[in-house]
Image (cartoon, rainbow, N blue to C red):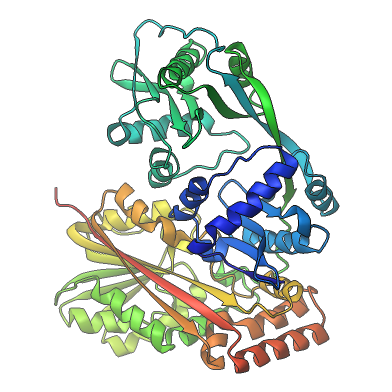
Amino acid sequence: MRFRAPIADDAPAVLAVLSARELTDLGVRVYTLEDLRDEWRASDLDLERNALLAESDEGRIVAYATVQRPGTLAVVAPDHEGQGIGSRLLQWAERRERDLGRESHRQWVAANNLSARNLLTGAGYRRTRSNWRMVAPLDRVRPRAGAPAGVRLRPVDAERDAGALHAVDDLAFTGSPDYVPESLRQFREGHLQAHDFDPELSRVAVKGEQIVGFALARRRPHEPVGWVDILAVHPDHQGRGIGTAVLTNTFAALAAAGLREVQLGVASFNRRALRLYERTGMTPQLQFDIYERAVAASPSRWRSYRDVDAAADPASLADQLDDLASVPFVAAEKRRSLQLLELASGAAVLDVGCGTGPELLALAEIVGPEGRVVGLERSAALLAAASRRGPAAGGRVQLIHGDASALPFAAGEFDASRADRTLQHVDRPDLALREMVRVTRPGGRVVVTESRWGLVAPELDQALTDRVLGTMASEAEPAEWLGYRLPAMLEQVGLADVASVSADYTATEPDDFFRFTRLRASAADAVRAGALGEEEARAWLSSLDGLLARGDAFAMVLILHVAAVRPAG
């Protein structure tokens, strides 16, 4: 059995696994090929890192799992159950969820999938709630309700309404157990740009100039079936009949388009919505159960770059930064990040989260003797390391101890500001970014850089690998990778001319490989934390060395730069 990330051409074979599972558990097919391709095209799904499939020795895809924002979906073809594939997918999913900074492991499965239920409960999961698919023949739904006084209904204008729909959706569902906030870009991609979304069949409720409710409708290809993707009413306008009017008018539009059935999903805890759907003539057809388990705290002895000074050995983290900066690929990308600032002689530039300060000298050379370079760093240990570089800059570099989320500078004080792998280590990256914009003058540039690495070694013992990766010494890339969201974040804080530049590198030589991954130190940390024994660590590292020597293991590194301009005025 081989486990690997899927590629676009795998979609039909993955769909076959999903369909076989659905027919066994539900008696009907739910996913379509277009649904799957929409999912894979989403900008926030890293298919290479957050999806996994199992391929038999004969080359047949027999299992599939994906970690998404709401949780994990994992399926095994019915004729390949009982071979340990589900357990392997569960281990992988839990590791990815830990890497993404999730507070709980969450999976949803068909209620009739006994094998999945036994696997999850045996691993300490418990069923927390259910989701139902509701259905109704369109010729039997209750008559449509008129709009309440002062409210008018109209079709959706996907471009004009997107921002308001996104805001109402967020307000309506914030606090729901399964709701995960999404950016406007994610909302557009997941709903308004879905292959089967039909704005003419969807409805918006408008009071005055404000959108106070909406229903997004989809028209299933090749089927006379409509699907209500979202029904949402602004909290200030709930309980006034708006939801009923929007829903029943959407049903009427679906019926007028020649569709014969309507479907939608509802959570078991949403009793108000369930009563509404039942009043309109809908009944439950399918049930999916949500299983959850808390994510165990990592046994790492480190506090990571979020709190360097609290680490057992802060100097080691400082050395790691300098060692990584010396790798030719990283050094080249650091130079590129400085070029994107487009600095002129005499400019003032701020480096937020300067660390040990490897770029401060280069910045000082660019701005010249009349320029000004300021490095801000929260860690006293890293700041001390940076200060040792100060004399070489001839007094043109100023080091400040401070917090990226509350910069101690006046508005417009700098011609440019930068943050290199800093925002991923602060609690509120949005606040830090707004602060960078505030202290940059109109017309000045803001450049943010983030990185991500991944280990590829299919023949490595997965159980031991999970234990080593679970105790990564540096925790250098916690939480969901910020890089995916950077362009949208820069736009949201008012920056213009947002442009992204990325570069990737594959480390196969042992020296570069272990610089990027630091897995030798991580194995030692895992031993100290009690996650594995010394013999296990030696055997694991020996296997990894052997795979590297044969070319069967490598580390992939991606660096993303996003540059933008603060508009004048």
